[in-house]
Image (cartoon, rainbow, N blue to C red; front, side, top):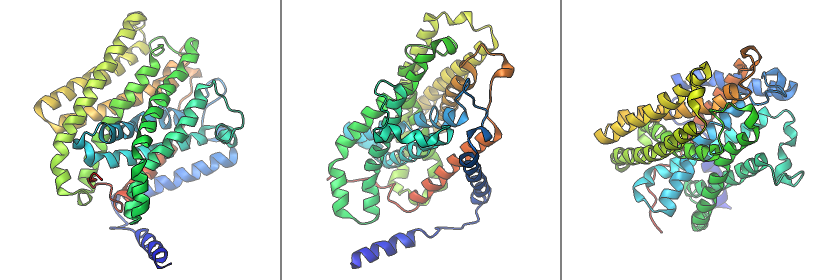
Amino acid sequence: MNERKNLIKFILSELKPKGPIFTPFNIITAPIILVGLIIIAIRFLKGLGVITHSSQELPWGLLIGFNVMTGIPWAGGAFCMAFVVYVMHFEKYKPVVRSAILWGLLSYTFYAGALVIDLGRWWNSLNPFIGNKFGFQSVLWLIAFHFLLYTICAFLEFAPIIAEWLSLEKIRKLLHSIRIPVVILGVTLSTLHQSGIGALTLMAKSKIHPLWWSEYTPVLFFLESIFGGMAMIILIESLMYRTLPHRIPEEIHGNYPSIFIGLAKGCAGTLFAYLTLKLSVFIHVRGWNYIISKIGGWYLVEFIGFGFLPLIILLLGIKRENLGLIRIAALMILIGILMFRLSYIFIAYKWYLPWGEKHFATWMEIWVVVAIILIQIWILRWIVNRMPVYVIEQEE
């Protein structure tokens, strides 16, 4: 009984703010989050059409384009790092594996969860999970079900950290004992649903511009989740190093240059494979026939400006051991994935429509997306300030 009281008392004490409340970041972001929550409430009270220009003809908007199409590959670092550290036993990356899993867990929780906002009949979103109207032959069903299963896997991977924070040693040991099969299941699920998002485009061949449609799109989407996930880890860890240095032990500080260069090498190798495959597809579909148009010019901006250029910068950063160049390349890679994925929604899909008939994101959609990102950052900061995220776990 005393242990339970002490645990509750500890949790309540941890809910208190740590550090000043009225910081510039808090003052700027709190109103944005508040307005975003109000817009979400309006959406559920008055319907989806109040906040978006989406229609039956153009059903996907920014909420799906960013939260699912972009946010999920950005979270790919979680399954990559879990596999590299816990299965392949690359001890070098242990200092960042916990934060990578945390970012992945939060991303899937918020981005996959935000998918409900963009569903017209959102109350039907539970159907795939409760046995009502299973669509076993549906790619979208596979993605939805795998989102749920992987979120559970990510939670189980992070749960030992929560148990360690609460000093629940028996539970921590139990969770630690099942970690390897959970990680393997998580990697398998990630491989399937990351490529599955790309498989959605295969069914709309006649509606997607030839420069963006390919039978290899699922493979391209999966590769994006690998180098995009590693690029996100580089940026997240860089921000943590600058904003929360007191939470990162000195021995981890000293390992950062080596870790970043190693991540950059993995990122560069995967990005090279991705660009090689994409170039092969471009040649196969005779892409040069479409380049002279405006939409072809936009494709070149994505392909060269945010594909080959960051690869060159990444290779220079690795060769010179320049972390600044590596961070610039990582940021460009993430922007490139954002552009490529949003192009499916706003440019490549039904590309033959007159420009005036295309739909674009409303200010409310943009506001909600920004608010969701900021909420995720707030929770990330709260967890890092309290839980042993930056602790090098010892082998048992």
